[in-house]
Image (cartoon, rainbow, N blue to C red; front, side, top):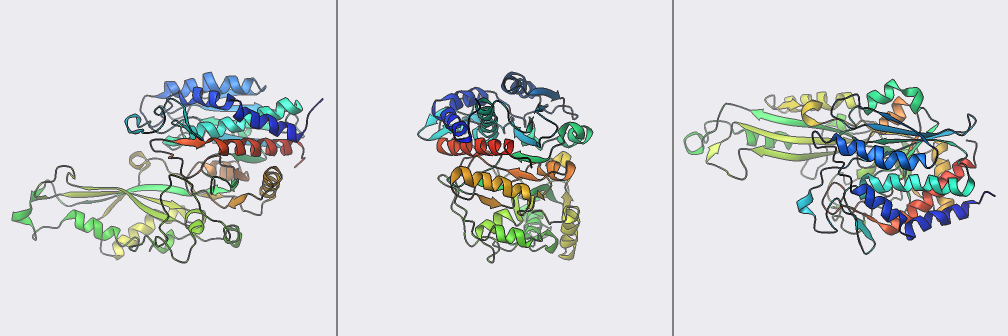
Length: 464
C-alpha cells in the first residue's frame, strides 16, 4: 500500500543520517569534472555515463545524452519519467562540472577530490556547487517513488557539464530541441540560502557581462627618469577612467546600469536579512547605495567589480612608464537592466568624461560567456505553490528572493522555454564556493532533503 508524506520525509532524513548521502557524494566528488580546463571532456562524459545515468535508470527514467554543439565542451543529459499526459511536467536542473580544483591551496578536508567530514561539514570540490545539490534532488525523487510507487507528475531533469564554463552550447541545444525540454514549471537547485537555517526560494539570477578596458599608448616602455612628466601614463589614465564608473563606495554612476525594480520585488525583500554564516566575510555597511538594505544590494541591484588590473609587471617592476594598462571588469546586473545598452552606455560615459582612448573589449571569445538576467515575479501561482509546500514541511515560511546574487542560465528556462523558474538552493554563502575548502553543511543537507521530498510529494498530489 502506498505510504504518506510523513513517511517519505522520514526516508529522506534517513538517507542523510545513515551515510548513504555521504557515500554517493564521495563517489561523485572523486570525478575531476573541471570544465574550465581544455581537453578535459573525458571526466565530464564519465560522470554522466557512470554516475547519473545509472542513478536515473534505477528510478525508471529514460536518458538521452546530447553532444555539445560547441566542440570541446561537455555533454548534456536529459533524464525523463513520463507518467501521464494529464500530469504537470516539472523540469529540473543540476550541473556536474566544477571549477578548477586549486589542489595545492586546500587547508581543510582531504583536498578537492576526496570527500572528508569535519564536524558538521563535508569538504570537497563540487560539494556545494553543484554535486550535493542535484544529488539531494535526485534522492528526494527516489524517496517519493519508494513511498508512493509513482511520482504523480512527469519529471525531466537536465544535468549539464559546462555551467562553470558559461553553459556554452546549452542555449543552442535547447533551442534545437524545444519539444524535448518543454514543461510546465522549472524547479532547480543552485546557489546559497539567504542564511544556513532558512529554506529559501529564489526566482531569478543576476546577469553577468565581463569586459576589458585597455589603454594602449605606444610600443615599448620608456625610462621614467628620462620620460616622466613628458609622456602619458596609461595606468593613471585607466585608473582615472575607472574612478568615473562608481564613486569611492562602489555606487554606480552610469544611469543605464541601474535596474528598474517592481513593487513586488521591493515588497519581497522588505524583511530579508542577509546572514551568510561562518567563514563569510563581514558585510561592509558603507559600501554601495546607502538607501538600500544589504538584501536589496545583492538581490535586486547591480554591482560593478574590477576583477584584475595590470600595468607593467607587478611582481618585477622596473623604472619605466608602461605602454599599456588593462583592467578586467564585470557588471552583475538585475532583470530590468537593458542588456543591449550596457556596453554602449559605457562607451558614451567614457567619451563624455574625456576618455576616448580607453578601449572596450567585450567579446565573449576573450572575456567568457555572458549570462542574461531573468526573473519570475514573486506573485506567480507556481511560486505560491512551492512556498506553501516548503512552509508545510518546515513549519515556517521560506524566504523568497527575487534573484540570486550570482549568475546562471536561468534565462534559458524563463525566456527560451517560457517557464516560471524557481530555484531552491541547498548551500550557504560561507561554503567557499569557487575557492579552496569548498564544503556543505550536513544539517542544511538534511533540511534540503526534507524540503524537496515534501515538495515533490505535493507536486504529485496536485493537478496544477
